[in-house]
Length: 243
Length: 367
Figure 1 (tube, each protein chain N blue to C red):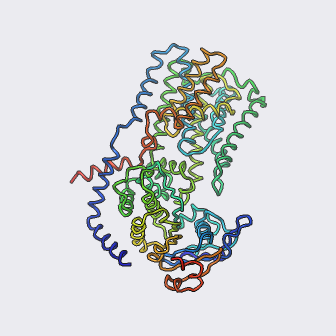
Figure 2: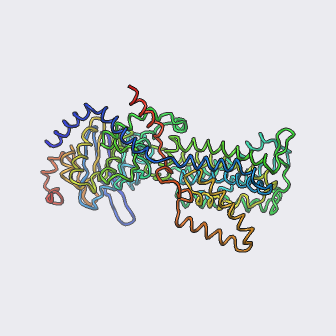
Figure 3: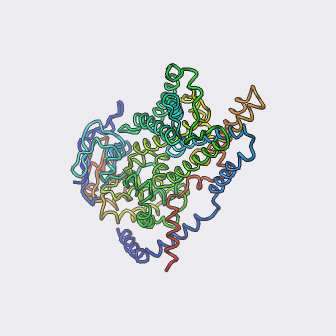
C-alpha cells in the first residue's frame, strides 16, 4: 500500500470530527473519499496532508510512519495537496506559479544563482500545455477564471512529480464543461501518481475513481470498488439514494 | 466512460502537434506580456542621477544631511528585504542597525580601530550575528511562527537593547558614546562632506544591485511565495522557516552596514539608535515609499527625511503632527506606497521567468 491511515481520531474541543477513520490507497489508484456533509472527509484529508495533527492514529506513506511529519517533510517524501480553497499565488504569473512549485527542491545555491531556471523551462511549459493554460503563461494568475485557477493549482500540485496527490474538491464551483475537462486532465496522471479525491459530484467520482471510501460521522461506513459501493445497502441509505 | 475515451484519443491527437502548439502559445503569451513600457528602470535611473548630482547643487550643510539620508535609505533596504519581500514583520530592525553602530564605536574608542576595511565588515558581521541569533530563535521553530510572535519578539528585542544601552555604563548610558574618531583609509579621514557622501552612495548602489540580483533570482520567487502564502509553499516542500531565517539574517547584515556608517558619520551613538523609535522610523520609510520594491524603500527614506527636515524648519512646533497626517494619508489611500503612482502591480511583483522568455523567442526564431 502506498498510503495507509488507520484508527485516525481527531477531536476539536468537544467535537469529534473523526472517530477511528481509515484509508488505504494503492499505487496508481484513484481513490474517492465521499460522505455526507460533516462526515469528516476534509479533516481526514488534512490529517493525511499534515495540515492537522490527528489526536490518535497512524498515517504511513511508502512504508514510513509520517504521522508526525511537517507538511514540508511530507512534500519531500512525495505527497502533494491541492487545497479546497484555491491558493494559487494571484499576483504571480502562471509561469511563475508553476516554476515556484517545480523549483521547491532546488538547493539554496541554485535558487540564489537561478541555476535551475533554464532547465525547468520545458517542464513549466509542458505542465501549462497539459492543463491548457499555455497561452496565458505570462498573465497574472488572478486574471484566470475560477475553473482555470483550479487547473493551475492541480498543475502546481503535480509539478513536483508526487507519488500521491490529495485533491480536496477539485471541481468545486466549476461548470459542467469544466468538470468534464477536469476529468480528462486527471486521467493521464494515473501512470505515475495515485489520487485521493474528496468531491461532492458523485458522477465525477464514479467516472474517475477505482475505489471509494464512504465516511459517515467520522467513521468508515464502507470501502471498496465503485460497483461494490454502489451495491452497498447502507451506503445507498445514507447517501447514494440522492444520486 | 465513452466521453473519457474520446477525450484521450483527442489528447493523443493534440500531442502530435503539441510541440508546435506549445511554441505558438508561448509566443502569444510572450507578446501579451511584452506590452507596456518598463517603468522601474527609469525610476531607478532618475533617482541615481539625482543622487549623483545632489552634492553639486546642495549647500555644504545639506550635503551632510543628504549623506545621512543615503545611510538611512540603506537601512530602509534592509527592512524592505525582510518585510516587503519576505513578509516577516520585523519591528526591531534598529537592533541590528544600532548594535553595529555601538560595536564600531567601541572598536574606535577602545581599540583605535577605524580602518574602513575593518570597521565596515565588523559592523556588517555584528548586524548579521544579532539577526541570526534573534531570527534563529523567532523563526526556526519546527512549525511556522505566528506574525504576532515575530513582531512582538523583534519589538521586545529592540526595546530590551535600548534599555540595556541606557543602563550600561560601559556603553555610555543615556549619553551613548560621543566623539567617535573618523573612519579612515591609511592617513585619510572620512569626515562629513562630499567624499563621505559619494562613499555611502557607492555602497548603497552596490548593496542595491546585490539586493536586486537576489530578489529577481529564483530565490526571490521563493520569497514571493513565502510572502503571499507561506503554508502553500511549505506543501510544495520548501523549508519556509529556513528561507525566512536566511533573509532575516541578510537584512540584519545590511542594517549593520548602515548602522556602522551612521555611527561614523554622526560621530556618536546613543540608545535611541537600537530602540523602538528608529525601528518604527524604518517601517515608515518603507510603507511610505512602497514596500516590495527596492527603489520604493530608497524613495521613502529620502522623502520622509526630506519632508521632516523641511517641516521642522518651517513649522517648528507642529511638524510631527503634519508628518503623521501625511503618512496616514499615504498608507490609507496608497497602501502600496508612493511608488504605486507610477508603478503597476504586475511590474512591481515582476516576472521570474523573464530571461527565459527572451531565450525562447530567440530559439524559436532561429531555424
